[in-house]
Image 1 (tube, one colour):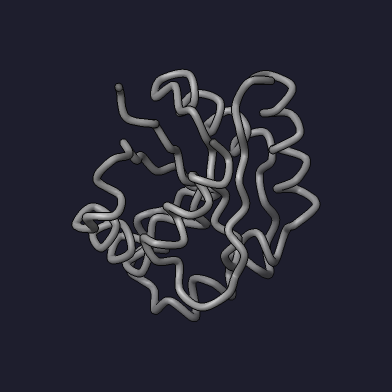
Image 2 (tube, rainbow, N blue to C red):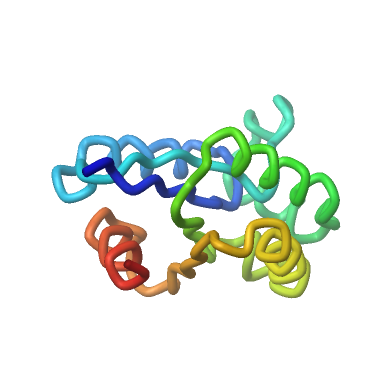
Length: 138
């Protein structure tokens, strides 16, 4: 039996997200899945150098490019062919919920067989929580 493929939509590709990815990559509970990542917003090189609170403030007080996010996510889905899309409801989701939901609606229209799971912001986004979301969908 082949491994289920999960694509996780994270807020941004910052240090915290990279640390979370490393923990997930090393987690035995997730070894039965193939996991890849996508980002609601791709940080510029300048934003990556900012302290996290400054970077987050810039994003929250700005706008989100729905078309860019949709196209990036669509490309990632086409390239990775996941069984499930997991949405990390981090700071970008909390700042722009209607925009994220709009993108997800369009994704669901483009990929009607793709299962979509939402991670609730309770505690940390740990490996067990990811596994439970995937298991609940299958």
